[in-house]
Length: 271
Image 1 (tube, rainbow, N blue to C red):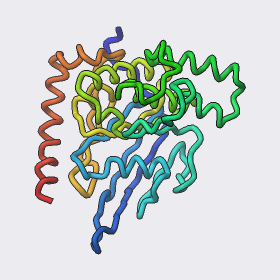
Image 2: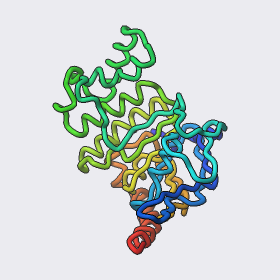
Image 3: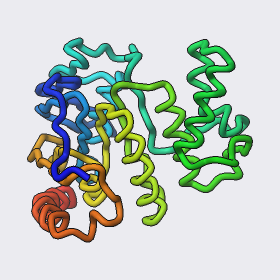
Image 4: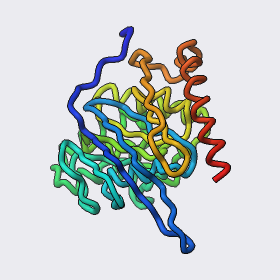
């Protein structure tokens, strides 16, 4: 096991500059994100952390081109994103599993390959490998209604990863899971990420989750979301999702970030 995590490339994959987003609700303007700026380099796993309502998912959805910003700029691989125009090499894992209930595990995972016109033999081989990687052997022909929440999230994750995205956007994908299932999913994701080293922007409100997974934690302020701090998470990789939480380094960094995050929770309650 290495003593230090490998360095990410200096090639910038996602650049956010002076980003702003406002909504109108009940006749008044609500500023969700204001003057947010940060960069993510190739191969970095970055967690976007902050209290509820601080604009984490809003930023992610702007990067994903699902909603348009009101100001600022977003560039992916030095190209300005265009709202409503998907980026081919960017994958998105949602909060809910969004599986097709009428499709089996293998058919759900292989859906993107079908759309891409991948030949049937190659598709089967890639789906079989994905099922094994996710620890879903024996469940290929099960339907989502027969699976646990954690298993459905594994299927959802593999349905995105099988298309081999270079950049992965994840919006609190494990937020609805119980603690033990969440830790299991952390182990699955860490193992898969070690193999491909995608550039990841991962939204969470769970500090423990951010510390377990990320190379950096970008902390947003209470609404309107601004970048309050950018913490380096220099724990060695590969990581054990359970053993890591028992280390002194984890406890020290948790305490340091928790103090700053707690200030934003307090501000959020007063908004």
